[in-house]
Image 1 (cartoon, helix red, strand yellow):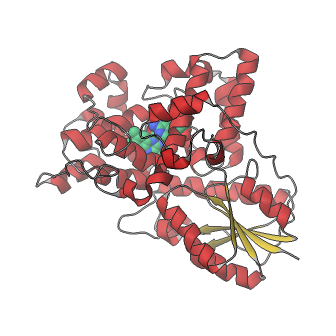
Image 2: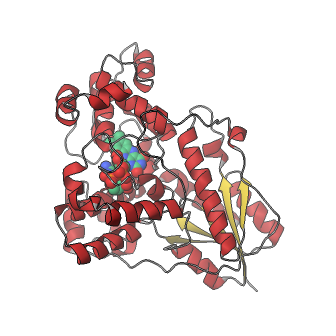
Image 3: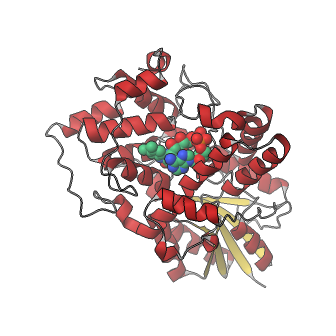
Length: 423
Ligand SMILES: Cc1cc2nc3c(=O)[nH]c(=O)nc-3n(C[C@H](O)[C@H](O)[C@H](O)COP(=O)(O)OP(=O)(O)OC[C@H]3O[C@@H](n4cnc5c(N)ncnc54)[C@H](O)[C@@H]3O)c2cc1C
């Protein structure tokens, strides 16, 4: 008899989950578990999670636990880093094998590596729209730039169909466990922001509702290319990112939903553009996998480029930036939206990143770490990849990408409504 443990990570779903499917196929008795990892939840300096993402993850784990119960199974909840908590749990239940979905970022790969030295581990890859095995080149030849990557992928397009949903789970219960309260992590819910026009709710059900609403009911996908650079409003972009980042939605299910929509309503540049953005995500995932720890280094993947020399008052400039108290009201507005809601538009993110690096002369990692803590959709590959890209130390032949914030606010916030609401 094979006794296994499946540990959820950033794959909080029962559908399109290859690793879970394999665990169910292989085990006679299977235990499901989720661990609130100390490295994220208990980190103090810097803090690595804010109330917005914490709440979103808690809601998602709770939703997952309910869905599992309805399917006849049980989700164990624990605390501690996976490589510490899982071997203890496996010993308690007498498990022979652990199953995990594979990640791409360096720290997460380190977890896989450490765990594989302690227990029998099986990982499955499920992270990107284009599966690692379907890349039209050898991984060691991953192109340096997104445009080369995209052209190669588009020339040999292959997206797998989704892995079927798991409707019946015979997972075993070892001992009853409950969700930890947020105050255990020093986090306290705040009142919803007055200006916020969108409420993110964690869990696959709300993620799939957003998918249907935004694509089908509102038809926003058909004009996405024209609206995607806006700053405010609930629907100018999909807002799928928080659900994708922790795996309540899979990029493949979004792709196939768009294909279904196209076959009914026709395709246009906009319907393709969302897939194009998912390819950006893939590119940063693969780039992080390729470059490992380098994406967290000051000079990123370009150690040959000159290092950053910050001004003497760097710390006070940074404090003003993160608290929305710079001399630039457009930047302040975006930073306030981030702090109060955990979210900021892509246009806003590009502007505040350029401002930190180019106008304030600060090291990009200060901004990236602040985003890591604050963003409701934080993902190491997308976050550090985008920051590197904008600061000239990433996958971009250009060494600077300067956003002129006066021009940007005149173009994207011409009547100043966004800035007035948030500054
Ligand atoms: C400095 C900076 C930091 C960022 N940090 C993150 C992060 O931690 N997590 C994150 O998910 N995105 C990050 N992004 C990318 C992008 O801003 C967000 O994915 C997007 O704004 C989320 O909103 P949406 O779901 O409405 O996106 P849409 O415009 O509707 O795009 C659909 C999906 O495509 C993907 N996507 C779109 N643009 C990008 C991009 N530039 N890079 C990678 N994926 C993309 C996302 O999964 C997104 O949900 C960052 C961008 C910048 C400039």
